[in-house]
Image (cartoon, rainbow, N blue to C red):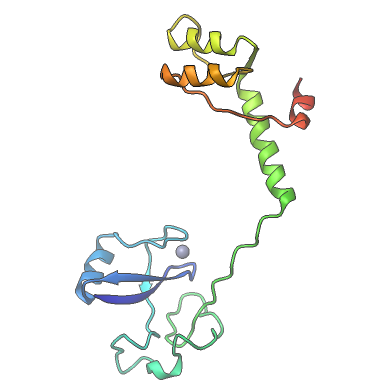
Length: 170
Ligand SMILES: [Zn+2]
């Protein structure tokens, strides 16, 4: 088993496990290796890992052991063997941005569904049985009704709509 340090064109670093160097080259040629962060298939092997066999013309591994703090990022278009890129952690989403995303999603549901109010369970069954036009509907149903609908194979999703959304659309 061989662990290789790989890097995509966006300089994301990730590890790949391969049976052998040949195995890696084969998978690379077949486009089977892609960056787990961005899906880029243009990956190349980092030459700085000390456990790799380095060719003489490249920097010796002792110059950049992987445990040391990262140095400056490699310039675009080069494969500088001594450069490491630090992966910047994504910022933690704030409560505000989560709420904004939730409101946005709820608004889309509101815009793309028809409000059938208390008739939800009845209407869902009619659509399911082809008696009514197939469309997205929303409305009120009791927990018992929701369970029954699901047991009948009718897809329903519980959705708590915040008042803010209701106020802007109704
Ligand atoms: Zn990437």
